[in-house]
Amino acid sequence: MNQIWNIARKELSDGLRNRWLLAISLLFAVLAVGIAWLGAAASGQLGFTSIPATIASLASLATFLMPLIALLLAYDAIVGEDEGGTLMLLMTYPIGRGQILLGKFVGHGLILALAVLIGFGCAAIAIGVLVEGVELKLLIWAFGRFMLSSTLLGWAFLALAYLLSSLASEKSSAAGLALGVWFLFVLVFDLVLLALLVFSEGKFSPELLPWLLLLNPTDIYRLVNLAGFDGANAMGVLSLAEDLPVPGAVLWLCLLLWAGLALLLAYAAFRRRAA
Amino acid sequence: MNAVEIQGVSLRYGNMTALHELDLHLEAGEVLGMFGHNGAGKTTTMKLILGLLTPSEGQVRVLGQAPDNPDVRRRMGYLQENVMFYPQLSGRETLQHFARIKGASRQQADGLLDQVGLAHAADRRVKTYSKGMRQRLGLAQALLGDPRLLLLDEPTVGLDPIATQDLYVLIDTLRQQGTSVILCSHVLPGVEAHINRAAILAGGRLEAIGTLGRLRNEAGLPSRIRASGLQHRERLLQTLSLEHSSIRPLGSDGIELTGTSSGKIELLRQLLNQDQPTDIEIFQPSLEDLYRYYTERAGKALVAEEKA
Image (cartoon, rainbow over all chains, first blue to last red; front, side):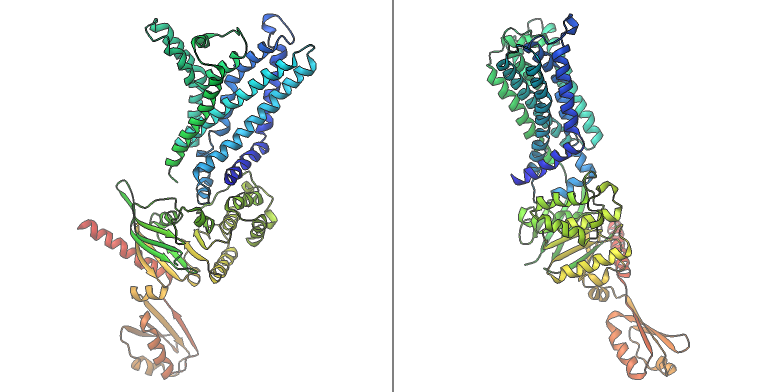
């Protein structure tokens, strides 16, 4: 446990030192405040509209951003230390590979969680203070759910980043893989699912299709945030989820499971990596 | 208990054999110099001792236990060749990071910075360090937690002559305190006086191991004795018994005797019985000579093997 924290605190202090934490927090705060007040500008409205609308816009933005930030933060965690020559030194110390990996996960995970808390938390406070007649209970509940699920989504992609960082032989190929993973889950996956839906013309088992959404953490994340509001405007493949017979708690569990499984796979890959 | 016990260890990667049936032990408080060309198996042997590689055959025990045992690693220090650190951390932060992982104290980390002569640069980032400074930091890192076994891979690379000398003095001190040391080096001059035994590796095989005296005898390389200020040189040239040795005049009043290492004491005794030289110099086969001899022998054996 102690050893895990020893690695985590170094990652955490790195995150403070190279201003990652500051930059992500600022980015989140600016985006959240911007979306809350200007998000409805396209439909001709200026100013704060409603909490559900704000959360829905924020969630669709975070679907793109969180995976990208998590992958950027962690894609070189293993291969970068290997190339830098510090990994081998570390492995001659009384510390196991599992402890190294978990330590990095805790450190990076805390950076992401803190950035979400500071960035989106500030936006929530701003809304609570500045918007007249806002329902505080709903605000806290909605933002709490949004921030927690965003953090979990980030963690799932951190774990995926460790997996490809353990598999890659060079930092540059890890960066390429990270980009590929981002494209796959954030852009390609839904398109493939839609294509499957359209071209199969109902031959593809309609019961099975909604379950496929669970294979993508970003889809689970969006479901979690949409499920919070009755009759929220589910678009695209997400409308499939109306047929998905699972309660919200299961979706949360799936998101956690994603992070856990990816971390296990990363550990397996890291163990096989030559010293 | 031996600090390191390697028995019948072979290491293969696919078709390539990196180590052939290596037998090697290191006693407590012993300094072993390990020499060989690039690819001879020095670093591989170190990685086996560190538990970073698992032998295909044979057994490695370190401080009486399996090498990847955390207790063993706490009592082992390693300086890798071309040691690298986190560029964004300062020297002090680096050392404290590794001290925490090894369970060593902050005070020791700071003390070591002083000991390796980095106190003045302790709070500068490592990326501003010269190669020699990084090497010193690497040494400090290896000394964290008072190791019983120290593995130094090319420790003098990047060090100036004075720092190199300081390193050797440190190794002497550690040896007196009972620490066992394995020292890999390409730089042979100067090492001789600080090692108990030398191991010469070639092509993944242990070509020779022993004290320098033993290796000299085994190799049968000539030693030379030069004596000057002799009063009866002509008589000496006639009378010195010259079994396995030769004699020739040198300058106006000197001679040079060339013979095997084992015969040099007898020659000296005869010389001093018959004359009173004003100066005597003895040139023994150096570590370089032995290294050349054994690696060439290994090369010839390899060629013969390939022909057969």
